[in-house]
Amino acid sequence: MDLLINRNTLLSNKFDNHSYLWFRYHKLFLGVLTRKGRKLWAIKFFNEVKYQLKMKEGADPFWIFLMSMLKLTPTIILFPLRLGSTIRGVPMPINERKQYTFAVKWVIKSLRDKNGSVTVASVTQALENAIYGEGIAVEKRNEYSETGKFNRALLKFLR
Image (cartoon, rainbow, N blue to C red; front, side, top):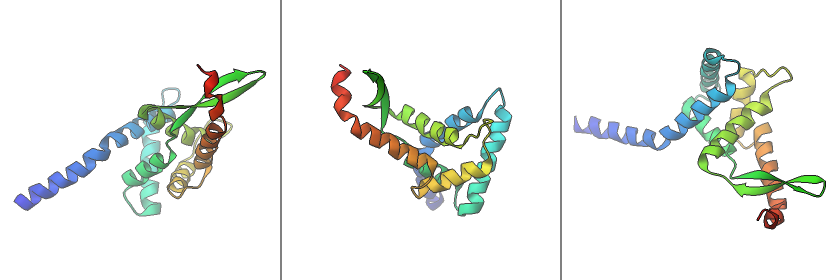
């Protein structure tokens, strides 16, 4: 009996470390997907994405989703600053909540087509590619961070 209790507490502690992140990303993902009051559609869509991830990768979709989102989280935000006739992005650090929001929005916005719709296959492919450091969302993150590196000198103009 003690062995069972110890095993359950170990598993619950392992889950508690990442449960907040799972809840946060899950909630944000559904919020970004929901448009025009279609919450039930967003829940079905997300469940289908989890099922497809499980079938393709053969692992727990919780970990696949969490790892891909952690790889996509940015560390800086580009604050717009007008210098002359151009608008430049000045890098500013952001808190964790905004990091999660940006990661989810990048995935969904990069996959929307002209009509504003997203397919299950495109989302699962983007999440799989993010684990391996490939895909549209990873390119967006790298481009964002490189722009921030180039514009570090502009920080003196913000004060």
